[in-house]
Image 1 (tube, one colour):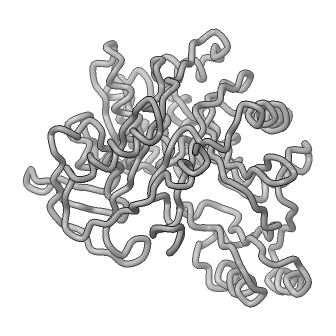
Image 2 (spheres, rainbow, N blue to C red):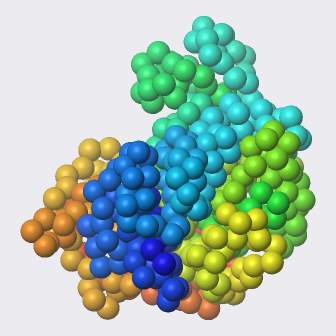
Length: 421
């Protein structure tokens, strides 16, 4: 089988490495991929949003199955275009991908179908938004409606911060057209949990829960990032909470999307907060999370391609989905200065002893040599029977990866370990 994976980050590298375990796959193409994937896939210089060229490539190269991993091409309709061309796909169509593409849509969906989430108001008028903030509860959460590379959410501690956030989105357009509408949302408290799930639009199968570490620096200090590390499973996510989420959030969401004629197939990501009033949805994503994928997929014992095809074919209920009872940890190594200004182009050395545990996100091949080419350069992962050992192994692996101006958090998993004590 020939497989095509659209995307070029650490998430896609994790997907590709897991797919390689299937012996029926003869070739994997990454569009565009990155230099760090060159040993695991054939890199094709076609951008993740260049849907027309993706379709052309798939047809010319007789691709048997395509996996569209990032949010942008999903929201733009890549799955629709590939499916129309006769290429079976993993991922939601454009109608379903709106669950991430528009925060206004997803909040209104939850309200309409009584899915627990934070209280909110939606504004497309700057003056009315500012007026609302004169009396709204503080702190508050300001969200740009559309996609913003995972950065379209600002937690405002003061009224002044809240008003500045709204102005920056609606007036200064720091997130472009995504800020034409904003959601002003109740600030929730409690542990955060990420739960990725496979679904064929009828059956939903949650994967192992995970805990992301968004802040750039140790002690959850510094700016928000795309994620500096993850652990799985998340110790806050107990069996009792999982049952509540399945009954009140996961199944109702799938049913709600069906009721709206937006049947969702693929990976639906639930960003949850375990509040004193029970689990609530912070956000939906229409795809695998990054870097959550880098700890969830290493724990998957069933064949990934078989599961993906079952979501496409509507046969998930009859398909085995088994995860290890162990734990996984991922430490992200980034370029100094990320998520703001940073330098790239440094030689990246990955020891042969850890190459199978490294998922590269930002690198390019220059004359056969691997160079850094991004803020988050890679994630170093390992697994074990328990989280303590998985963390020790992951941090030991970090020592086998070197590049100038590298930095990483030294406390990934610390909070999880405190819960487990």
